[in-house]
Length: 164
Image 1 (cartoon, rainbow, N blue to C red):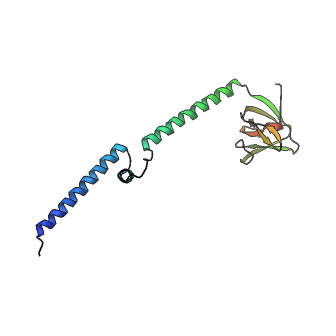
Image 2: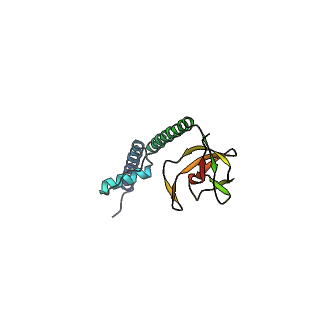
Image 3: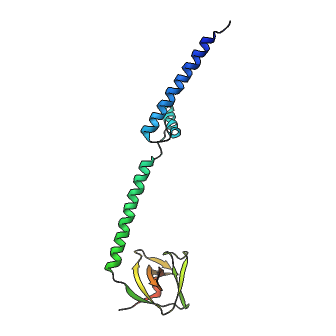
């Protein structure tokens, strides 16, 4: 039994047509879902086979979240600036037994040391952290200060606030 050459060509033409239709369908779904064809085809396959899956967030939704968070951060920065302007900077004197106090880059004992401030030096108080912590059994807060044109954080238990 010999096969006719024409029938074999029809089979390949139909297969090619079906593949083109599937590709066009996946491309259309990808555009609609704003996802890559790879993600869209996996999503469609999971829907067909009944496997539960969700689409990862689209680029647009991620950008919208970033913009929303940036607005919140900007709002908090503006509130902080208002707070700093309302609360005129007070002076404080460093009071440590060790001779120097470490000014840190962040309100954290493990953060980098910016400068060592000598005992009995005067600093400008900028503001306090709102949370209280315990350091060596003593309750206190981190305080943002300015000294020698540098800003950083120190533990408020080592400050004596001046009445100036």
